[in-house]
Image (tube, rainbow over the protein chains, first blue to last red):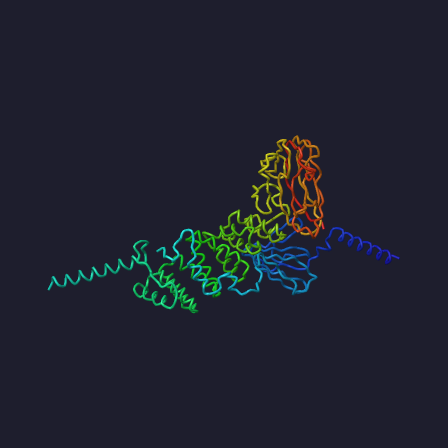
Amino acid sequence: MKITAARRWGWTVALGAAASLWATGVWAQQEVARLKQVNGNVLVSGQSGLATGNEAQPLANGVRIITTANSRVVVVFDNGCEVRMEENQRFDVESDKPCAALVPLALGAAPAVGQGLASILVPGLVGAASIAAITNSNSNSNPNPTPVSPN
Amino acid sequence: MATLSRAVLLGAALLIAWRVLQVNAVAYGETNRPELRLPTEGERRRPALERALAANPARVEALVLLGVERDREGDPKAAARAFASALEVAPVDRASLRAGAVLDAREGRVADSLGKLDALLTYYGDEREWVFPLLLQWLAVPQAAAALEALAARPSAWMGAFLTHSCGKADPTHTAALLVRRIAAGQARNDEVGCGIEGLRRGGQTPAAYQLWLNTLPRERLAEVGYVFNGSFEHAPTGLGFDWIADARSPAHAVDYPLASDAAGRRALRVTWSGKRVAGPAIHQFAALTPGRYRLTGLARMEGLQSVRGIQWALRCADERRSVLGVSPRFLGAGDWEPFAFEVDVPARCSGQVLQLEPVGLNEGTTFVMGKAWFDDLRATRTN
C-alpha cells in the first residue's frame, strides 16, 4: 500500500515537473552544445539580448552565435559535431541537423560567377584594343588624346 | 697646353649640360617638349617608338605607346614590361597606370591591377568616373572582391567615396565585407556604414544588417546588447542601424534624452509634442528578433499629454505593409512613472521588425497630440 502511494506520488512529481518544464520552455532550452576556443568578441543570444560568450558556455537549440571582426570560436555539439566559426559569421544552434549541414553564414560573401574572369574585370574591353582605348580615352583633366606623363 | 685642356673640359661640361637639359625637357617638361611624331598605324609605328626610346629611354609617353603596340601585336608580356618601365620612370603617370591596370585585369592579375587603380584614383580624382563602375562589377567577382577587401583595411583617399557611390547600386552583401574592414580599421564614415546597413535591411537581410551594425559598436557595449538596444537611453543614440532613430524633420515633436529623476537610470527619453498634427512616429528602432514570443516592458510617465486616442509603442514588421505584431497600452493624461508591458509574437516571415512610438490610429491619418511623454528602461525578453 505504501509502495503504491509512493509510486503515485513519484508519477505526480514527475508529471508536474515535466509540465512545468514544458510551460516555461526550459525543455526547448536543454543544452546541446558548448563554446570552445572563444577568441575576441563572440556574442550569444539569450533571454533579453546578446551577451559576450564565455569558454565552455552551454548552448541550447535556437541560440544564435555571432562573431565580430577578429573573433573566432568553435561550437562543439554533444553529438560530436564541431562548427568552426571565423570572424563576422553567424550560426544558429540546431542539434537535429547532420554535421555536414551545420555551416555558419558569412557576412558579405561574394557569389561565385560563371563568366570568364577577363570579361568581368574589363567589361567590353577584352581584346588588345582595350589598352589602346583606355590609354587614349579622354578625361576632363586630360584633354590630350596622347597620354602624357604628369612628371 | 693648359688652355687646350680647359677648352676640352669646358666643351665636355657644355655637352653634358645640354644633354641633361634635353633629357629633362623631354621627361619632365610640360612645355617645349619635342612632339612624338608617329605614323598613325602600321608596321612603321613600332620602329619609330623604338627610335624615340633609343634617343631618350626615359620617355614615358613612348614607353606606354610601345606597350600598346606590343599588346596589339599579341605580346602582352612585352606590353607589361613596357608599362612597368614607364611606371618605374614615372610611378604615378596617369596613362601608364591606366594601361597597366587594364592589361593586368585582362590577364587576370587582379591584385596588380587594383594596385594601379588605387594609385590612379588616389592621384586623379576624375578617374573615378570610369573606375568606380568597373569596381562595382568587380565586387561580384570573388577574386577581385578579396583584393578590394584587403585594400579596404588600409587608409584610402577614395574607398569611402566608392562605397558611397556604390550605395543603392551594388549588392549590399558585396559591400558589407569592405565595410567591415573599414570599420575595424577605424576608416568608415557613418554615411557609408548607414547605407550598407540600410541596403541589407531593405533587401530582407536583417540578420546580416544587424551583424554589420554590431561591428560599429565599441567593445564595451558589446558585453550586453539588448533586443531593445539602449532601452535605458543612458547613451546618446547614434541614429545608425539598430540604435534609436528620432524623427528630427517633423515640427510636430521634439525628442531628447535629459536627466530624469525617479527613472530607472540617470537619463530617459522625453518626447514633446507641440500640438501640431502628427503624421508619423517620433522615434523608432529597428530590431532583428528571431521568431518567437517576447514580452516588451518599460516605464512611462505622462506630463499633460492630450490627444484623442493617446500614444502607444508598437512593434511592427519592418516590411512594406508594416503589419502590427503587438502594441503597448495607450498613454494619455498625466501621472508618475508607471511600468507597462505587452506581448508580441514574431512570426518566421518577419525577419526584421521596428519598435516605434506612434499616435494611436496612425494609419488612419494625421492626429493631434500635445504634451510630454517620458519613457525609460525599455526591454524585450524572450518568453518561449
